Length: 340
Picture (tube, rainbow, N blue to C red):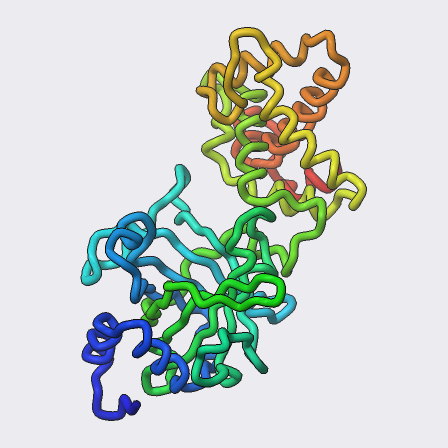
């Protein structure tokens, strides 16, 4: 197939109408993707070939970002969840409480010397790239870690228009999923998730994003303020986590993770509480932690005491907090956490 005389818009319309057999042919005949053409850009993604019911339950539109790590030179990326406003509507990312976009399914982009493919495919895709979700911070039990996405250029070779498919890799098997997708270059990246700043596969002591959120909920409940200090859930703790994970010894990994999960589940041991800590309102979380701090069980009291120490570090690494208390704000938060 040639795209020489076909506009990008017309090509997109053709791909939106294509069935899975046609999409396979486009993928097999696509050009090599130059990694340098991707890095630093966000791409508007459109799912192709999915039944309408599946589209309603998942995403029709999404965003994929490609970013090269400044220290190790590896090409990473992530998905951004978008509001499903329609194919022709501008991209509108879903956001978290602090305004950062909701990112998920992080990945590394690798050159495909020989991407494994289902036996029914007409050719290999050794000329393309592969998006690999198993090499970065995704939850250990998330099935996306079994997925790899071959990616080729179906435009003019500039990296403006890309086509990919999701393959499920199981021991001895490579299964084509119904998920083909089109990527259109959209805009330069304006946000990098904090977890991407960690180089590659996280060391054991690094908490996964959802575990950090659990920890921050615990810290916020411990340092419950009456307005005298900023609320912890309104502050950005990326600097605290970088300092803690960079300075702590590897053998602290298991204890840090176990403390977070144990405190999240500990309220189930209390009379009158039927939910984990993360499912409770903020005031109820604070009350549960106070009750746990007075528990006759020594282990529970120690868990709360450990969380209190970390909550203090997370609070006072912020210049705004130290300034509010009249302290010296000249030293950076990361220096405070490392010194502690």
